[in-house]
Length: 187
Image (cartoon, one colour):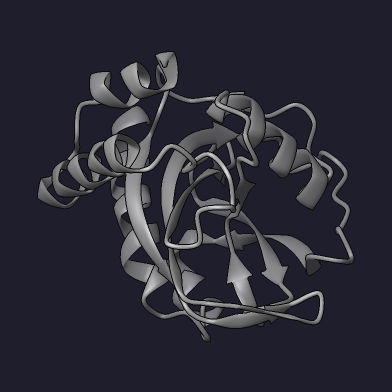
């Protein structure tokens, strides 16, 4: 499984990423279905953290389920090409087609807890997202569009005002702040 090798090759940024990398690899050893939502305990997701050229804004969507502004991403649903999934989700959720990757591959590995919620009228139990994230740059002038079944807004948010928008998921600010710190390495 070459997708496991891409995770093994990833060099963690900090202790949290090192531990989360271990958990993701251990989950891959234990479960044969972490690429799909069939695994109701933990499954892989692919996401993008998108910044503008000046690195002073981040592109975010207003997530319908959590009623807050968040990054873009989604379930792999059997696809082991993490980058392809992340780019597909970015385009579907924002309309952005011409983002470019910053860096040389995976930007962050994170184990994220997902609270129980309702989706399409069905209960979704708490579980873990084994997140594979990419840092992307996009042009602020590229047309944006929403994906009505998932979000109700798309906009560029000033990085220094992120805490004013990520109100209903304050725990995500720690993750976003890590991303911002790492993104500054590429300035």
